[in-house]
Length: 255
Length: 325
Ligand SMILES: Nc1ncnc2c1ncn2[C@@H]1O[C@H](COP(=O)(O)OP(=O)(O)OP(=O)(O)O)[C@@H](O)[C@H]1O
Ligand SMILES: [Mg+2]
Image (cartoon, rainbow over all chains, first blue to last red):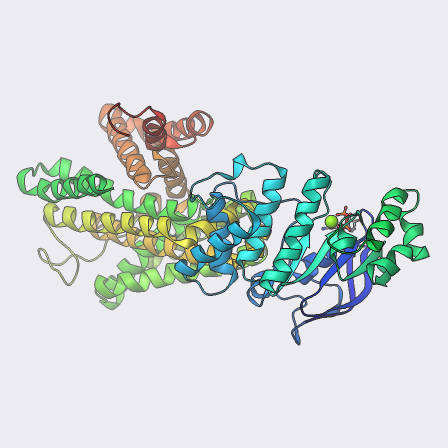
């Protein structure tokens, strides 16, 4: 579904993403992990058109989308969330999502936009009240809204940038369950970004690990969690979570 | 909702009936001016309300007025054709200036400066081609004998009042159409966060161009109407930076986010100018601009929603009278 080859992003002299290649297959959940500043969000920004790649190619369903304007990429079936939620405060929650439903699907039909908004809000568990204000939402609510906006654009591939502390253990579990539900019920392929391995490892089909802009490991969660290079990257900074993740990954799914 | 529509219909009927019962020429003249300028300010606010603060609208008004008058005087083109042509010219100018701005993300203060330059350039062109345009001395469309529909020249104020009223209502309807369209959501989103709007699938450049184009076309029409009504135009009255500033001032005073805000702004600015003119005569030339400047600062600080906006807010937050749910 998605084939990324030799992707590079430089900011001035600094290389944030260096020669990263990977594939995403239809229907899978790919976990993308790595420490702070390893380039995860930058990859998402290139996949969604927010940033133009410095080099490399991005094939989505067989056609090159690298460097295309974001609205075209979104219309072609990629949806994204932002790591730090970026709601539109001047619009109600419903209007935020309806906007994405209207423009994101390229249908430009008001009825279909409202329908998409209702469905997306119900999916993430937010109220479909037309006038409820964004300002009433807490951190978890804003993440849900972010997800609802992405879903309303009718994606085939969802880029979920979830890596943010701020959520407690149960909220993290809920977020993970949500993504699994989105894949299972809507058939949407997902790339899920996190920097803590914990819950992620239980839900994803495969994991890819980034460090300093480079891909250092890729494979099944259990294999990646045991990869010495990955342990090294997470050691000292996040050793506990790495071990926890290895344990999580050995647990049978759904437990 | 229905009672609101009824209020609008009654108000409109009263405005249409007015010149048939009341014909004091000076007052009718003031009303025509208020209607034309209200339309111009409404045109400005169509984009201004989304944070696209243009100081180039004096330029669009100037193009509307001068292109219409020049085509009439030099080529004998009827304003019925000249006005659409002048609107096309202003629209093209708007696209030429706005496209690079939007494409390269020139926003905020930088956008204001670019549009300010546009006003300046149009003014320069008018004065530089003074052999045709009369330069800063102004310009008069050739007069027909008596009223002539084809030349869009009418001696009586009532006809002008009705024309101006019609166009003003059109302006309000366009404002409302934008207000209720998905484009408003898109523009609100864009004004807050362009990247996030784009990630929702909005073609940011195209949406901004669309709203700018609508605004520029309307403003050119306002300029052309002003020209046909006054039968005299000069860079000071219909083009240039002062006119652009006056638009910003009037809209902010009246209210940027309510449909009738620009109209309230026009009433205030025009009455203010008239009072200064009558009260102080030629001594007060230019005073209105000074007063505008001071009031503008005061309003931005203390009443950012404008007079009408603040009044309506007051009504909304007031507890509803008992008896109604
Ligand atoms: N627009 C930009 N200009 C300059 N540098 C940038 C820009 N965006 C990101 N960077 C840098 O690129 C690197 C990768 O950032 P990125 O946001 O992709 O990391 P991340 O893996 O998402 O980290 P986190 O887990 O903290 O979200 C960082 O060093 C960051 O400072
Ligand atoms: Mg990030």
